[in-house]
Amino acid sequence: MPKRIHILKPLPHRPADGHKGTFGRVLVIGGNAEMIGAPAFAGASAFRAGAGLVQVATPKPILPFVLAIEPELIGLALPTSQKKWDEATDKADAIVIGPGLGQQKQSRERLDAVLSLDKPVVVDADALNLLSSHKKWPTKVKARCLLTPHPGEMQRLGALFGKIDQHNTADDRLDTAFRAASAFNQVIVLKGSHTIITDADRYHINTTGDSSLSKAGTGDILTGILATLLAQKVDPFDAACAAVWIHGRAGEIAGKKVGQRSTVARNIVESIAEAIHEYEQAFGTT
Image (cartoon, rainbow, N blue to C red; front, side):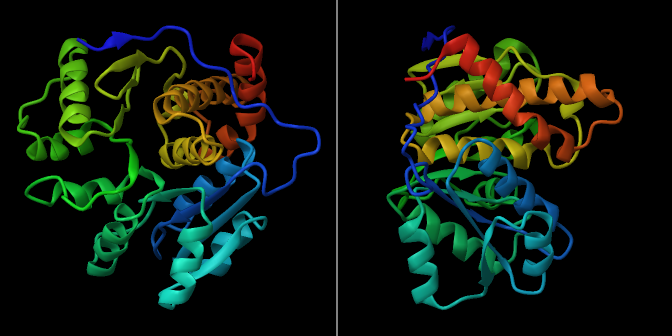
């Protein structure tokens, strides 16, 4: 049985003389004509969580609209040359792939390319569905992954580790997360009420969040926070525990300000700073 972790780790210290290169570079890969907001929210939340640089790689026709939502982002129009792709992935300290990615052939090729890199990678949304279409976990994975499935995505991923029948009980959710983390040798963030984080040796059950998070786009916000902490060299399990806590608390704060019924993703992005302040008060910085 993995060891349960109750006390979360401090956030990394931010030196007063730090610059944008000090605080990590995140690359977000995703977006399509019907999902313009997904990579924008991921990038915006990465900035709010403290990343120094965030680049978004998205199809050329929608890139101007993504940048209009979050003008601090660096753009990379897809498709691009191999040289520019290699430059973007080489420079990135952490990569997000999946928000609004789509499930076309080129999406699968980009996912396979990212998984072959020796980088921390947050695998979310369409990237999880592309993984679940494999008959087994890919053999050429060098990436140190954080997989962030909601229950439906985990149901589909279950085919890769032999657990098709899944139930939404607390014990079954734990069992499913443990088995996935062990089979894939990656960190699993099984989202939902009381999100479970596990690397098969340790696990944590999150205590923050409410129905303010039950809106489209909120999962993209979590991926951005996760990627920032990974880019700042935080251990993947510890990064996931902190990011999920901050994400959940940001949802609670936003819900109190505008009402749980009316909260939308942008309200949660705007509440990340306050949630991080509360996290630092509770758990400190290194």
